[in-house]
Image 1 (cartoon, rainbow, N blue to C red):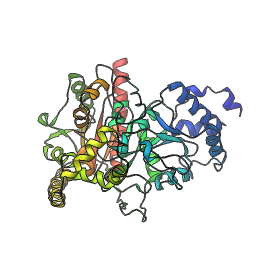
Image 2: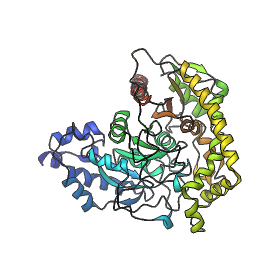
Image 3: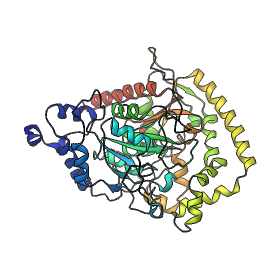
Image 4: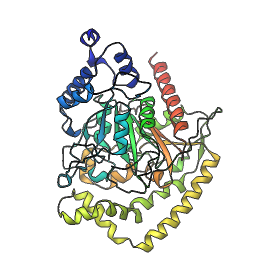
Length: 456
């Protein structure tokens, strides 16, 4: 108790290592819960959370934790947030659509595993409605503010989860990722976004966007925390037909064979983005240029192909029963699903099989593909003028990943010359999650070393 009184909790990083070290010295979980609520109030951003577990209820969660044992409970006492298209028992679930609001009786499987690992669920976070978007502004609620520049988009669809971590309100947050929703907001807020191999984490209890592609993702301020949370929630769930066992590939002893895009496959919108990528590329071990046009072209199937109709399978019946309930852009996207037929769906499957074969050949030659996480950093004004174009641009290096059954990890890198965050995404074949995490840790260490060298 004395430790909790004398320590300035406002300076305590909400990271697993620091929190567990503080708990071991006597810090109480109750004090951390109070501090998380203080940080949320200090942020003064009503767009981050759509539902907050009241302080008294959060303190009751803390009091019900088993004795401190981080070996048995790897997320013991760790403040956590959950995207509001993932069920948390007893808390409202909206998917950023007020008419959809209901209170699930059971936790999603991933949330149940978080709790079993000792995590504290502090609230439900904002999102692009029905997880349809990469900008974070397609919500009827206040838009979460980008932590680097409030005039810029926060990224989506997992906007609130990324901002909650970037502001230090929580240590870990769950998002979802179909086209990049677990990576784009991480990049635009300077944090880590881990998108696992498809099916590695159960999606039971998550409202789908494209059920055959969806992943539950993890946001954290460092790769180690993201990995700890991922390992806590990963594992086959036989009650989820899209859950699949993963044959984990541990990092190889030799340096990984890293590919980076050739110049003609680099689609960066401004000089600041180009400078950040050049600095990041210089930190990658033995990177070789490779053409990735075939991979990038796969993305056309997601929003210009029949997979858009899978959105209708997810929430089309609700929209039909509740006319006027959808955000205008969400409705526009849903309306586009009607133009695809069953024949189109099969032709799309055949085309995707060809793309997947090309991806197999690519990753036979390389272990990892490193790309800029995003090609642009749109302003809110640009989205108001054009709600579709900048969103599509943000998915340049993300949209193809789930379609090709790949794993990905977005990590922060050298900042842009204008001071905005920038980063890279490491992409590998299914089951390469551990190898990507190891490379991500190495890359961040190299970036920190380079920053220290410049400062000296």
